[in-house]
View 1 (cartoon, helix red, strand yellow):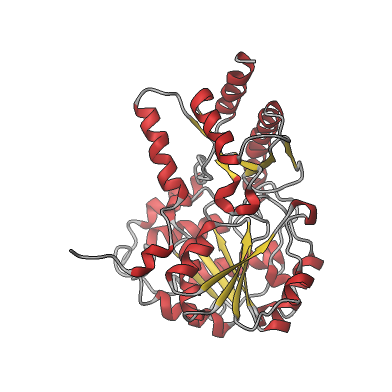
View 2: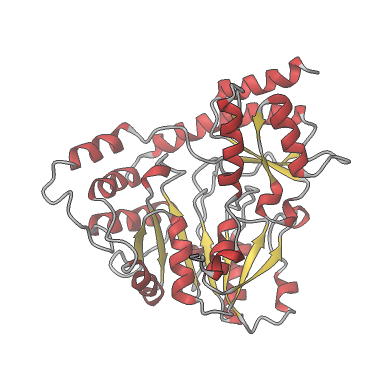
Length: 385
C-alpha cells in the first residue's frame, strides 16, 4: 500500500471544497440554492481587457514559454499602478514579481523564508491558507487574536511581551479578510516598527483595497517598510479576473529574488495572453473603479437588508466584497446557524469559524451575487415570517 506524505496529516481539506460538494448535491436534487458563501467575482473583466487578450493570441511567440519574471511591460504596469494608486515607488526590474495569483505567493514566500520549526504569526480570524501552508512546509503556526473591540487589529503590545525569538514571519491582511476592517497609516506604521524590532518578515495580503474602499492603502507606503515587508496583491477582485490567476509580490530586491528562486522551480511562466490582458487591466481608468463600486454598493445595500432580517449586526464602513455579520445574542453556533438557513431557506452563507476560532459568533455574506438573487433571498425570509 502506498502511503501519503506525513505532511498531509497536518491539514484538512479546505472547508469550501468540502461544503460545496454538499451544496452541489442539494442543487442536483433540484434545490434552488443561492450561494452567498464564495468570494468569486461573477462580473466580467472590461471589454478592453478581453479584446487585448484576444488580439494577443496572434502575437509572435504568444504560445511559447514565458519568462519566470513575467513580461517587462507587465512589471512596468504594476509599478505604474502602485505609484498611481498608493504613491509607492517600486523598481520593476528588481522589486516586483508577477505571480499566478497571490495564493501561490503564500506558498512561495513560505518556502523561501521558513525552515522547519520556525514560527509564523497568523491572524485569527484570517485566511485559512496561511495556516495550511505553514503546516505543509513544516513550520509552526502561532495564531494571534483579532477581535471586534480592537477593530480587528493585533494587540502588538501584548505580542511584544511574549517570546518571539522563533518567529520568522507574520501574516497580515489589510483591508482585512474576512471582516473588511481597514488599518490606518498609524496602525500600519506600528506593524512595520514591530517587525523591525523583532526581526520578523511582515507580509501584507492586499487584494481588497479597490472594492468599496475610498482610501486604498499599502504597507509599502510606510517609510522603511521594504526592509521588513512584502506585499501581495491580485487582479482577481479588482478586475474580475479570478480565474485568470494574476497576482504580484512587491518588496526589497533581496526578498523578491528569494521568492523568484522558489517560483522558477515550480512553473514555466504565465501565459502571454493573460499577461497582456493584465497590463490592460492595470491601465484602467477611474470609470472602471467607479462602475465596479456602484454594482457592489447596490448589492451591499440589499445585503444589509438581509442581514438585518436575520437580526445580525454589521459594520457599514467595512470594505471589500463581503459583509461580516455578528449573530444575535443567544444564537446557535455559526455552523449550526448557517446549516439551518441552508436546509430551510436554500441559502448558503459562510460560517465565521472557517477563518479561526475568533470567527465564532459571526457569519460572512459574499457580494458576488446578483441584486436579483439577494432580493430573492430576502423574499424567502419575508415569505416565511
